Length: 459
Image (tube, rainbow, N blue to C red):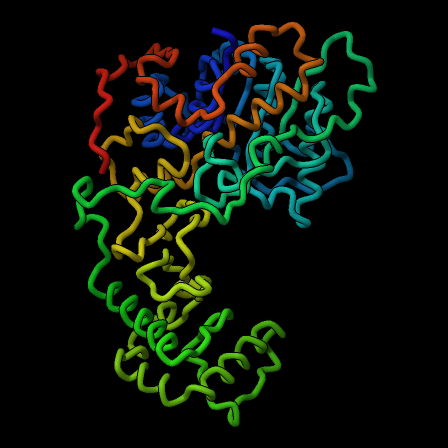
């Protein structure tokens, strides 16, 4: 064992996978969702404690590394004082209580990209000041990384998922005050600099499951959904046949009016009036063909969001060569290189080639979870939700390694941690897939670990 770690807001264990691949041993986990906690227990052998706001701090073993993908609750802006008082009542405050009590050497936290957006500068500054007040060195700048920007050799996956990482390392007792100065963000360029994300090929790099390996009925689209896609595929084919460029702006069939009858709405923002006018121009130029297409497919009877279409597939010839998403803003179509961020709701990527949704197993691969990872035959919607909330294993792994490299001057008392992590595998996903679950260093004081079984069914 080279180091120990504790995982807060553990979910199904994205951080656990990352730090296990790095040579760490988990001594504590906390997760409030009982279904996610059961998946965590089945795979990692630790039974997570529940609500972080009710934890007995004395029950948390001392550990070297504290990690967590914490929910971003709005911090209070009342008053003029920053620091601990202003974080009280938020889940970040509960993290700080664990830090104060256990004094881990390394703290690594993950959050959504928007945490460092213009509307959350205050919250970001509160987090930084609070960590510094607790004697941790942390950069003013956020480290933002996505799995699709990581070279596949290092375990990148074809999913856009930009996340912010806060990398804080505890100061030594002998550290001088200048150590608080800007340390810079951990350097991850070695895993991204020689990779162009446009080179991803979802069908080759995921890889996609074979039809014989999945229950087709469970993931194939319903009759109405297929009809909507057939209609829009016919639209694309119509445009190609007549050498008409498919608009790059959102197509809103409800707003197809002749340009002679078009009027801007003064209550609409400028961007919306612009799209409406573009739709009107497009319709007017192709009025006969578009009217015939609408009538043929009875488009007016489609749900409102299915009467809208967003083409982001450039020169693709049909929907069958693309990936598709049913969104509130319309049906979005793009090239099958990488998928948008997995989210904890029903916007699962659809494979145009088969008119079916990605399976939870395929989504788990996008998040870097090993092939033996088992979500316990629960409701599919629950599995999608858990994966949408998870921390990507490869991203967390490489951020952690980069933090060790950056702060090696503060880790002189942890030579085994440094050596094990920096000598670790280049690809944590490959490493985890080579291991059996029982090969990972596990602790479970409440439940016996389930029997060894690497050949789990994948649907």
